[in-house]
Image (cartoon, rainbow, N blue to C red; front, side):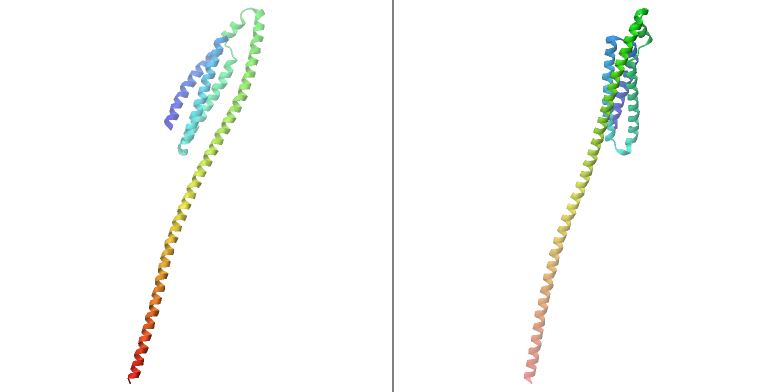
Length: 224
């Protein structure tokens, strides 16, 4: 299980390094070239998020006694992911000095118009960024709820499994007790039967002895 986590770690490190390099290039680009770079970075960020989800699932499968170290590493990776996303948002609305000069040019009459256009574009991008942030927060909240719900469901299943085992053990003990009671009942019945037989035999022997004694006395008296 930890080997899978470490494999995801390596993929995440390579991917985030590539994302960092591309984010640094975004402010230096304009037009379609910049849009293409932004689209590529967005795709890579989505891949990085999916890797984090896979890593988090792996951490949940690790035994509790070994989970602490991996949980700490996950927090570090999430912080790194948050920083990458923040840097990317800033890079989308930023321009390097070289690009800014290229857009404004040397014509003083067009500089103001270009600056106004850039400000409008920046405001539009900020608005889109805020909407994306709100959507991202809602998705993250939904994901956390789903994770918590899954954990609760897993705990309930574990508790039900334990309860089932307890019930099965109790049934086994009841069956064993019932079998023991049956054996004890048969033994007691046999003992009682033998006691009754012994008492009947004693009574018969006593009657025979008494009868024999009386006959002996009778014939002894008569003979005199």
